[in-house]
Image (cartoon, rainbow over all chains, first blue to last red; front, top):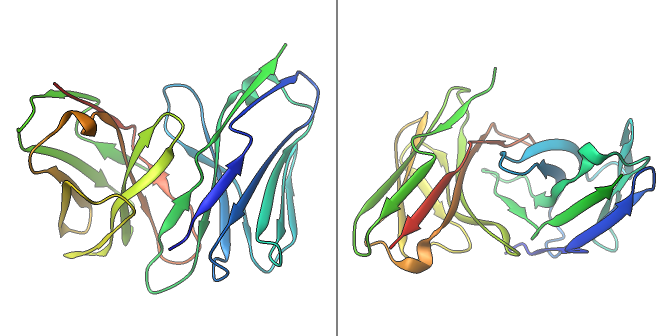
Length: 113
Length: 112
């Protein structure tokens, strides 16, 4: 089955700096890669996703890149703000008759004012 | 507004008890999931269901079972609770295709 690895497990950056979180997946048939943000005490929520026919996607300060050959995908947050502090999960899924989403172990991001 | 609702926010149960965690979604989603969240281990899939009465094992199904008698409701059952099942349990639902999963607020289960 699919296995998703994520690095680093914790990340501290100064406010205004960039943050990068990297994930790898094992199932070459995976074709959907969402990223979720979980603030302390809250439920995970989707912040951005990318499909396998796209190499890069951007939404304001957040961007995701995908390298299908290497089975890597990354989340980039620019101009970080304290409210970006949260746990971020990458995930992978493949389109079959049903959709199972497998998550990475998470990255705890702290943005220091 | 999208809603996935879990029946309890906090539960304390005794070892050996049968425990039911309930999840209801109002989005007419086909897929429903149960995850377990532990520090450093992320979200691990216990079971999922892609249709009424259909279920598939996830990565850690041992000690758990599920029930989906109606499309909007997905129940997680701990047949005989053990202390190593103390955890945060998250339910989620999604439509078919490459779509977003919506999570419930979570149930913090403590088994004593």
